[in-house]
Image 1: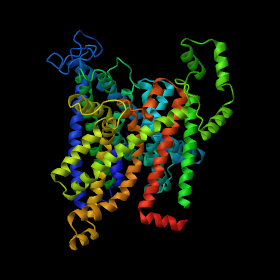
Image 2: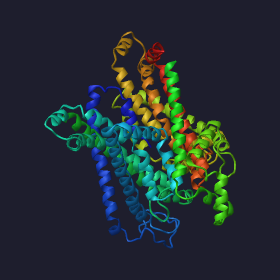
Image 3: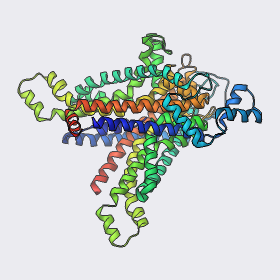
Image 4: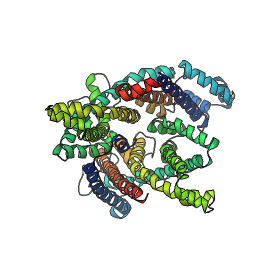
Length: 294
Length: 314
């Protein structure tokens, strides 16, 4: 679940000039397609209660029915309308992912500021903790945390943010440390600005931009992690509609009614694709903006 | 040599940190492990006397520092306690599952590299060609398809419709194909893009022009002059993707009932088998750290500049 795109970025040696131009063009296309996918999905999600005549939890007599006009995605093993569940599932899957990302960013920035600004034992403690947390593969540590603290969506969100903050904290800390040496920070200090003013007014905006880039690139990964862990039974419990959980339910009837797994799977893949494209496009835009203003 | 020692020392520090972390997980977990254990063993809520006795037996009534020391001593001896669900040693359980995960990971890695190298080089040789665009689209799709969706898709197509491959289990070599392909998909996507961009850069180098001017065949130019220098940064990427591989193996093993470490861990969590979860985190992290160490050493060996610089330092 660690960003593949980050890896390829790390690896790419200095790109040639035509390569750069083509990359930025593609970035815009990615941004447009990604944005379209995400907006359509969000709109459908909002409209779910209005659009669907069914309740995502109410069972019906028609079980494992193939897609029809009445049930465009068919029904599942309990006779529930799949389209309704996929739409309501978006709220749970995407909502939990957004919540997780928000917590990751908050925890990362807070710990990074603490560590970079106060230094000393706070710095030592946070950074050693970061070293340990990063030395366990993310998904595995999140699973273990859920294993000890019990399954459920809140536990899952808490576990994922508890293991995902490290890169954000390291980035923030680094920016605080280098930020102190910027000419404009020295200028502000010379003008008599206090530490907290410098931190909030001059260093934090700098940090927000970089953290935003990292976060936009991570959205797809977080969505995948939430659904993946729920698929393993660690997140939302039945009968809650959630994409990972629905794929898990679909696997039991995979060979008799593959549509029960296919539709939530396709929707999840589409959402991740949209987030990845949007993230990459946005990161390129913000990245460009960042390098222009500096 | 000094580098080797320093690198190994940091490996030991990581192991120490992770064993502390897995001990801490057990300490901070809500609920009384003794009560949980008894409830499972007896099948009904235990009495207070029983709980007290069990706490003593498990050493839970001893001071925290003493328990921590005992845990660390156990770790150095390979004694990680006993599994609550099977009663067997946690270390034995984990060691028995390890080879399955190693085989699966190596198979996936080989498949991913086997696809990425030719496709990446072909895409770099003709930028904006059909191969280049096709591989880019495949890469975007490959990294967006969740493994737990792709796995079932492959199962449907190859196991049910075509009846070519077995779907679950690990009793023959053909059982390895579907899980390995599922695990390899997103890696292959990343690797292809990395090979492509590195080869593309190498192709604009002077020595490539020189080779072409000397009349060296295009195939040799691509796979020798352009690809070889790209393989050094590629080793780093392979090293960085090992954590991804281990995490991915958890889901893939569970889907295909592949009896490796990943499935063992998920089963342990579903059974709330605390000692097994603790040992699992430790062994998975050790595997992760060990493979990173190997990737670093491979990098050192592959790049004469690094090898010589670090050799001179020692």
